[in-house]
Length: 145
Image 1: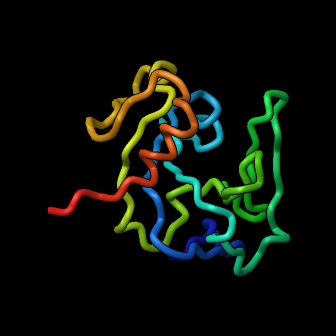
Image 2 (image 1 turned 90 degrees about the vertical axis):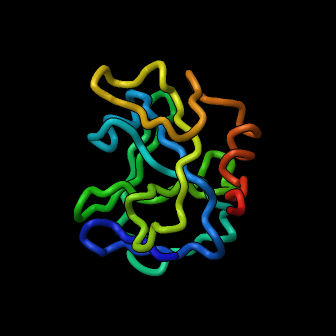
């Protein structure tokens, strides 16, 4: 599966089947996306590769440690390593083929915007769930029909 920023200057590739998605409804994710939520997933670092444009990436880190990596040309958010350097955070909207993706969790629903209507699909968490519980949801296989 491949992904790229809005202008195409930065491209990357994911190896294997992607995990499930979560949407984060916190105020920082709203600000960084300009939307009601940030749809994303994490993937092990050894399953991620930059294919072009890595040198075009710029970053911003808040005092709290929230970080945003983005394309210097178009401003699109782009993948970045998690704080333990073991996985990449992947914004789902950058993916070329997203037919395999399934939304399974909503994070920080208690701090959602008043106009944000959260879909009925997925487990809802008032704040950030335990990392292991979230990873189990993201890695769970789709039921066979």
